Amino acid sequence: MSGRFIAVVGPSGVGKDSVMAALAEARPDLFLARRAITRPSEAGGEDFDGIDENTFLRLEAEGAFALSWAAHGLRYGIPIAADMALAEGRDVLANLSRAVLTEAKLRFDRFEVLSLTAAPEVLAARLRGRGRESEAEITARLARAERVLPDHIAAIEIDNSGPLKQTVALALAALYPERAAR
Image (tube, rainbow, N blue to C red; front, side):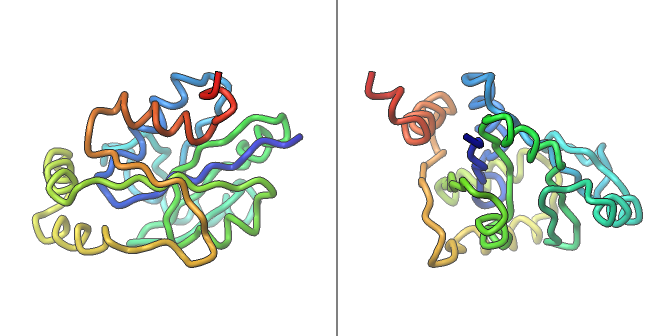
């Protein structure tokens, strides 16, 4: 049986990458998809492979990505290694844009969405803390935070305003209910 592709979505600053890393630590059998993004690696924030636009387009044409999309003036790609992990029966965690969920649902046989939320003041503090955006960019990101998922996309929704440990426990219980029942 193939693994599940678990899309982790939510607004900027909600803690998607922190939650994903903690989930992978709790469940070493999970495959954590490391995105390729057309921004400099030293931009910080998340763990990603920074590549230039021409390299990205070449890799995309060569089939190096299981899924790719453009958002916010950047290009994003999930490496083809995710397909290999799924074929091995491993679940794959990937940080996705909400705008690409429909395509991902069509692309992957077993597909789930983990939608993270947080209180607006928590998002604002986290965005300011990472120091990557101007105040105007933070305001714009907070305005986009309320975007909802497409109607045909079901999601497990978890509030990540509190301690990471609590969020991870809730996510594991929702994703692996058979283990939580024991």
